[in-house]
Length: 268
Image 1 (cartoon, rainbow, N blue to C red):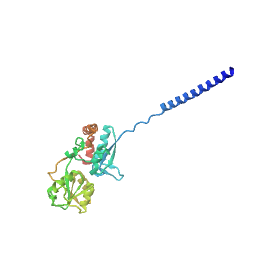
Image 2: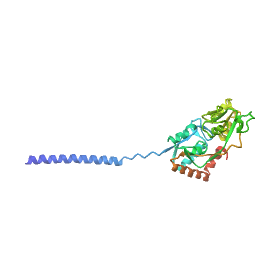
Image 3: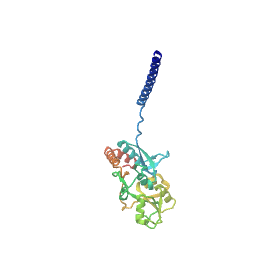
Image 4: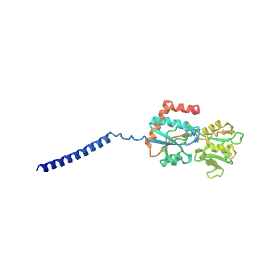
């Protein structure tokens, strides 16, 4: 009896000890899980499509960083909204598709607000007013208005409002329209004599001539050119972001931060 009793007691003790060890291990694991810090969610980075050769609005500097008026505006805008942004250089002719496909979240690239573009994107309130300009060789005295380009070879940046304007005058499929990926490339072609004139946004043309004094180009302003409003584009399915952009723009105009950036680049 005594031997059997001791054997049973020993078995019960071993079993209790094993269960106790399991309990301690489980508690330890639970404590470890409780004590382990949870990884914080990374803040969303909004991708902003910009051109990389459209000074003074957006252009790469020697360090391959995109700088310019639009860049500075967006940086202040993002700070007011409370979001982090990353600028993504994108060819203008594909910039709207990149936004529609979700590769980009916003566009700021001296984009003219048009009824046709409104069909695919939502635009913010206007933040800049511009017009087109005709660039010709400095010694050219024949071109005084848009109609004078009807018999000439005209360069323009593909997909821009300048491109649309040239098509209206020369015809959509006219072989004398030479399209380029960027306005600077079109202007370089004008310098070399490959085209007779270039039609593009006036601020961009004037900036190019000012920074390339040996280009021997001048601008012609046709009084019939319409004024063009620039806007920031967002996807049509993101009205919340659009509202935040408009609110921040209004704040920038009210507190003087927008005027300060404009004065830095345009003196006004």
